[in-house]
Amino acid sequence: MIRHLYRHKGTFGFEAGGSIDNLEVAYHTSPWDYSPGKKVIWLCHALTASSDAEGEWWPALVGPGKLLDTEKFFVICANVLGSACGSSGPASTNPKTGKPYYFDFPRVTVHDTVKAFDLLREHLGIQKIDMVISTSMGGFMTFDWLAWKPELFDKVFFIATGARVTPWLTGFNSAMKMALYADPTFKEHKNLKGGMDGLKAARTIALLTYRSEEGLFKQEEDSPDVMFADKAGSYYRHQSSKFVKDWDAYSYLYVCDEVDSNNVGRGRGGVEKVLNGITADCTFVCMSSDELFPPEDMKPWSEMVPGAKYFQIETPYGHDGFLIETEAIGRIIAPSLL
Image 1 (cartoon, rainbow, N blue to C red):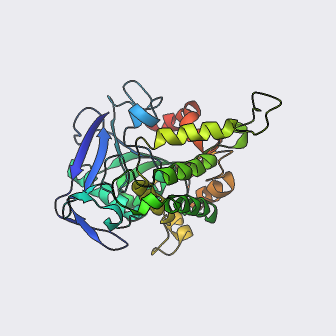
Image 2 (cartoon, rainbow, N blue to C red):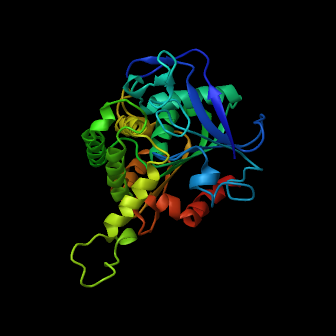
Image 3 (cartoon, rainbow, N blue to C red):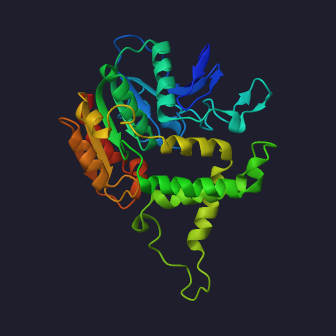
């Protein structure tokens, strides 16, 4: 997939207030220009993923000759607003100061990102999205987009996601934000390295929610006589240290806020009313051990959508199953590509 940058000419207003000029959206597409008549597959990514589905987070499914064939289909994935992966956010340069926006960047909601995606769609001349495949946070965007402009979509896949943020997920988000603010350098705004220790702690909290115990740490410490257990701690320190090489704490705060804004029923009469009114061909795919979007949440949502199909993938890998169980996911998607 090829990386592009869309620049919106003019002022972009945000749902929670505020605006910026010249909004940017980073996105990846198949290595050729879209032309009418080509089948469009739009991917909506998870919390801290980039728009590079082929190169970074779904290489088993996306690319030449793969299930989501970038030579056969016009595959596109756009990066959410507020992210550290290329789209406008708090780490972007404020033209008025020549420095990052930090907290002067408007708070971002799910609908803000969807509005930006739709501007990109119009810019590319796409009139119909044949298939949208959304994973995790990406599903929030898809629910909102589908409620806002239902005529755009034919087939929709919701994978490990939800129509409204739950108290459980909001609680984890709150803990992560507390970790960011507990780092005194987070508020100094000297540079984008502020809050790095807080970001490491926040990322560790997130990682704890992505796997089930069975899928991660069933193994014991290497020594039967260890005094202070630290095998799991060593793993999380390593993973969080890797993460902060590419992310800043300010962008992380903003995407967490975006998660907290997820409620497709807001201003539309409630979630059930919205889901009852969906006419697209929808498929819900749940990871059996997912603690963020468990079967007891995803199955009832699927039952609210007329004619929706529900699949449950048995996996020990928790929420991360959507990244790992690509063979099973591919079998579910494949018939809809015929």
